[in-house]
Image 1 (cartoon, one colour):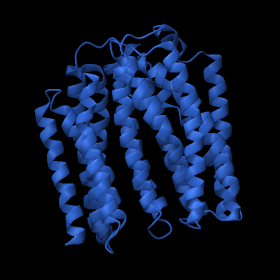
Image 2 (tube, rainbow, N blue to C red; image 1 turned 120 degrees about the horizontal axis):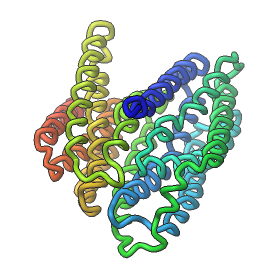
Image 3 (cartoon, rainbow, N blue to C red; image 1 turned 120 degrees about the vertical axis):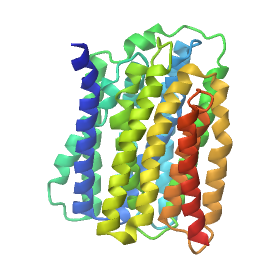
Image 4 (spheres, rainbow, N blue to C red; image 1 turned 180 degrees about the vertical axis):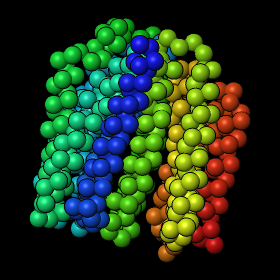
Amino acid sequence: MRVRDSLRAPVVSLLSQGTGLVQLLLILGRAGTGQATDAYFYLFNLGLVPIFCIVVGMMYPSLLTDNKISRSGLMRIRWATSLLSVLFVVGGALWLSAYDRLASPLVGLAVVSTLNTLVQSRLWFRAVAAEAGGNALWIAGIALPPNLLAAAVLLYPWNTPASAMTAMVSGLLVGNLGLLAFMARHDVGKMVLNAAPPNTGSPGGSFWFLSLASIEFLGQTVLQSLAVLLPPSSITLLNVGYKIVGSVSATFVNATMPSLVHQTTDSPRSARRFLRVVVFVVGVGAITIVVGVRIVRPDLLVPTMVLAMWLIASAAAAVAARMSFRFLAPHASTRTIGVVITVVVLAALSSRGAEFNLTVLLCGYAAMDGAAAMLLLWPLKDRLMSLVLAGTLAGLGAVWASIYL
C-alpha cells in the first residue's frame, strides 16, 4: 500500500505533463506561432509570477521551517497573491499593446487570462498548503483538469489563432474553477492551514524567502519582456522551452520531493540520494536529445545544447531549493540574489547588441537555475553536485560569450 501511495503523485504528474504536451502540440497546430500565441504565453506566465513568488517562494518554505508563518499571515498571502496576479496580467497586456502586439481580436484573450490567473492563485494556495504537509497529489495534478479541457477545446477547428487561444484559455478557466470547487469541498490544505500558529515570533524568515523569490521571478519577468524585442513568435518559442523544462522538473521533482522533505523531515540524506538519481536520468535524456538533434537538425544544435543544460540545472535547482527550505537558515537564500541580478543585467545589456537572439535568453534562464543550485548545494554538504552545476554554468557562459565573439 505504501509503495502504491508513493507512486500516485508521480503518475498523476506524468498524466498532467503528458496532457500539457498534447495541449502544446495542439496550440502549435491550431494557432502556429505568432501574436496570438505570444500573447497567451506571455500573459499566462506573468500571472504565475506572483503565485510562484509569494505562494511557492514564500509561503511554502515558511511552512517547512520550525518557526512557521502565522495564520493571519497566510490569509494575507492568499489575498495579496490574487490581487498581484491580476495586476501582472493587466500590466502585461498594456506592455504588449504599447508594442502593437495586442490587436483588438486579442483583447478577449487578455480578459479571460485575467480571470484565469485569479482562480489559479486560489488553487495554488490550497495545493501548496497540502504539499507542505507531505501530500504531493494536488500539486502534481493541479494542471490536469484545465489542460484536459483546454486540449479538448483546441480539437475544434477555430477560424483564427486569436479565437483559438481565447477559447483555449476559457477552457483553462472552466477547468480551474471546477478543480477549485472540488478542492474546497474536500478541504484540501485545510489541516495545514489550521495548524498554523495564531502568531509567529520571528516573521523575518518569511521576508528572506520573499526577497529571494521576488528577485528570481521578477528576473524571469524581465527575460520574458526582453523577448518582446525579438521577432514575432520568439515568446512562443521561448515558452515552448520553458514548458519542456518545467514539465521535467514537475514530473521528476515536484511530485516526489514533498514525501522526502516536509514539515517533519529531520535529515537531507534521502533528498541528496534522490538528487543524484534525478541529475543522472535527466542528464542521460538531455544528451540523447542533443545527439538526435545533431543528426536531424544540426542548425539547432546550439540552442538544444543550452536547453539540455537548462534541464539539468532546473531539476537540480528544484531539489536544492526544497532541501534549503528545511535544512538551511532562511537568510541562506540571499547567496543566490547577486547571481540572479547579474544574469538579468547581462541579458539586458546583451539585448542592445545586434547579435541578441533567443539563445541568449535561454542561457539566462538556465544560468539562474544553475547558479541557485550550485550555491545552495555547497552549504547543504553536497559538494560533488555543486561542482557539477559549476561545470554546467561554465558551459552556459561559453555559449553566451560565443554569440558575441
